[in-house]
Length: 356
Ligand SMILES: Nc1ncnc2c1ncn2[C@@H]1O[C@H](COP(=O)(O)OP(=O)(O)OP(=O)(O)O)[C@@H](O)[C@H]1O
Image 1: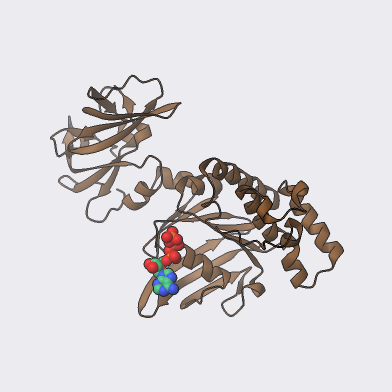
Image 2: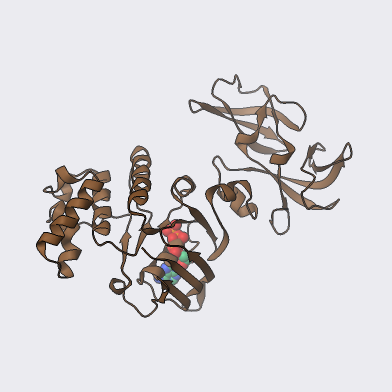
């Protein structure tokens, strides 16, 4: 287990800089998720920590020691990829122990470590099978087992679950979390799935265009996003965004929307009259049919998911999503009214996107 520190890391391919100075301190045993849209630099950053990609500028420290000149093997990290990269001609046990064999460990020690990891991952019964005789989830568990047996200082995961079907992803997510609770090895996990990041991580790093937008616990990012980008990225279904201008309604601070209606906002928002803003309304914060701070429009689509129903309705020329109780009687074509607490109306500067 070790701390990881990134100090003003940069990466350029030729003249093109794709990572623009990333600094981050990860404490021992922490589980960090790196999230962001495709091409934002998640994998590049992870590969630089792993030593698989040269660092153009800045320093990576593992356990307080600068590792820039070290090879991946010397960094004592283990990486789990999306493709399991198992050797097809070897058994599960041989796959898991292969790296230990390469590093000269004796057979009794290898067997002991493989046995322990197999127990932890429920692979004991499968140790004599070949990868072709395993399901996708089992293969991914073997790939994790191969990482665990090395007892590395840091685990790096690059979208390890993206080849699995939806149900298995959820199951494996739980297993990874349980595993981290057992072994508590410092982990850095790249995903573009914000639910995966929210459920697994102690802290999430939101990357955009090679820069960090915000670092925080899952709930910090959900409740107090630093800007519109983070607000739109964290939370599912995504936050609804409407343009407006800061005004007052009945003497209270409000945002006037394009259709002329006013949505009241919390008095502590740092806004000035006339300021061009965007408000953010989370689908799950709406109260269907509620009075007061509400928007109304025709229902376009009703999507039952079981416990909850997603209602898409039109307001001010935009499609708005509301999450309501599964038994809500919303119907296509009827008017849908959605109210919200003023404390739950997020406000962002329209020019900079910064939370106000
Ligand atoms: N070998 C390379 N040469 C030039 N540009 C590259 C190279 N590898 C990656 N890039 C660029 O660097 C940027 C970051 O890529 P990276 O693969 O790290 O993104 P990512 O966030 O992991 O994306 P995804 O979620 O799609 O895997 C992208 O703009 C990509 O086009």
